[in-house]
Image (cartoon, rainbow, N blue to C red; front, side, top):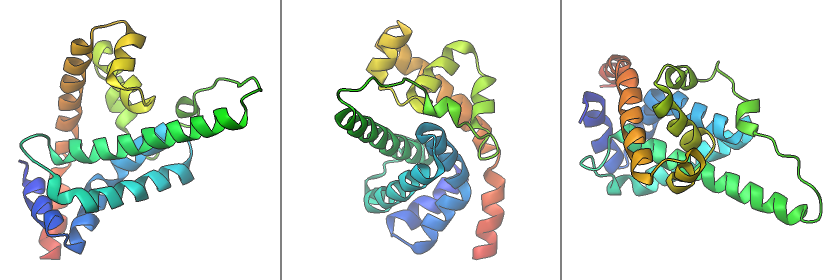
Length: 188
């Protein structure tokens, strides 16, 4: 467990009000950037973040550091919340426009705003095989099975590339760990 996780996780489990502030301070921009890229709209991304933080708060006691790093756990909550909203939005649209031809577009790619987050830059620096898996899973909201079919690679390969790609991204974001330690020192 990283130094920042050793600070945040106990507070989060006790549902201490500072825990959510720290999660927002340390991880909020990155999580919001991912939600924004997935939703393609700032208002919907804010809804995803709000719902995600409610889920984080309610499920904090279930977090198991043996299964995932805190950032990975948070990322999965935000990602799954965004996917649920995208699917609901698509289902609502399909139900409303059943008899109309839908124009296909990718709202994620149309609304990339690098000023909110630099994850896209970090992903683009990866080898193509990791980059393509992360893009379809996180930015296009596909499941691992859908990614396997879309990329025409075995499901196990998708999982392995995802794991390696996330490990590479985690290394980048851990570099910013010292900022939160300074904030923590100021709070206590």
